[in-house]
Image (tube, rainbow, N blue to C red; front, top):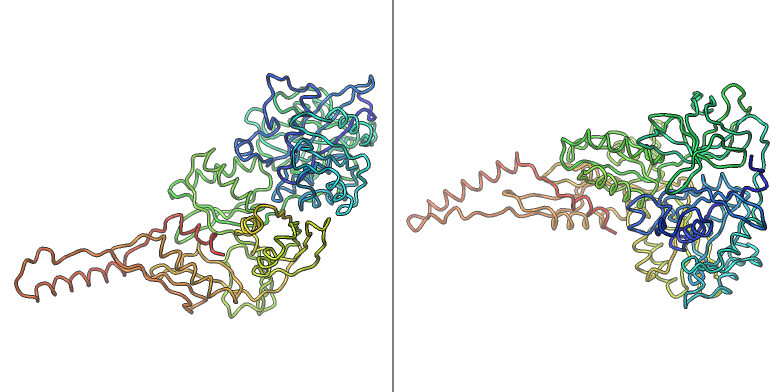
Length: 599
């Protein structure tokens, strides 16, 4: 048995691209968990997309052993994502730790996500160790960054370590500080089993796996356990300690430790993240509380381009959900696109990653509609409904009011770009709550912004108007009433439901003009004239016309009476009228992407 005093559970938290994964690699190699021959960059990132983009999407755990002053310590390390879309991964990882390494780039300083992650760590009452990474860069200014951390976050940085994960500077001092500063886990090893499921995924050979932190008691191989949320019992078939390359088998996971539980399940639905595992015969009285599952933030329709591959898309989503518990989806039908799914995502990056994984891993060609959020509709009869698809919006006569979700956004930007940022935020209907200068060179802004205004291209615009120096973080902040309308796009007289969007009334006319102009450039010419219209209810507010392709029907007439030519032209005109009445226009994928690009 490993005494609790010799165990340390900690996470690495930071803003995106501040060096979390590199630091994790360095700690793993220094502790000897992986040989130099086996070592590769981003060793804890398992997906190709993570390696290609240089980002962490899914939190990963590893058990390390380190000898300090003649005593062997067990270090359970969790590497967390840095992008705002995956903050739920950070929160559930921190729920199973006693400490956190707050990594800050010594050249860039405190960023928006840094502050957000610190607040999550403080809510979980963790010991936070400030770490200044990349001190070997020419632009590094450790003292300025220390002052920023103390001023902006209020952390004591007297013991802040200066390291370079890339060149392995200060790593041994960091390991010593982890052992001396982070408290050991507490809990009663003799109490009934109580373990938190903080991650789950699917393995093709072992089935659904639960990554757990044992809070009290222990879990042993062959034990009958009870999953308290689903109230189902299972036998523990196998136990492992987490490792990025080869899992280590064990007969027992002790109190305070982290491990993988194999129950032989075919789905992960019975081992939901945040649930509590206890002993079936001698259960604990209270489950572990205070953990919230991930909630979808934006919704979009995903449709196969080949309509006969709908079942393939369903199978692909079922398999993907086994490794991404945050994914929610339900079938939907579009008159323009056929059968597909309405999928809930944690953010725009999450949507991009899921679509790319579906196309790569399952060889599908997909169309994604413009993302939307959940609106709260109060109807004239007093009933309240929630909609996530503009096509579900009731008739205007039945609507008393529409409320839209808002987010509290935190933006940190150099003072020279302050004017650009304020102009951008004003254009997005944002309400200022706070403005605070950091070290006279940067400004911290807090704004309330309608969620619908940030899910399209806000992040791209933010980066381009600040030359990439701004950082951005957000969290949900309830609903507020808005003057909103549904904008429909009609192609050849038919409403394309997949292109419908909900917009502020003040922006509807401008949005309608821009969309019809964009569609005119994208939709190929047909043998008949095609009208593209933007409408609010039955009122047309913008129109563009795609001219028909012409055919010279009089080419065979070399002379003779003019009436013969007129007769041929009239016949062509009648034919085009008939085609216009029965012809169908097939929209290319770019037409749906055009909605995303309109500002």
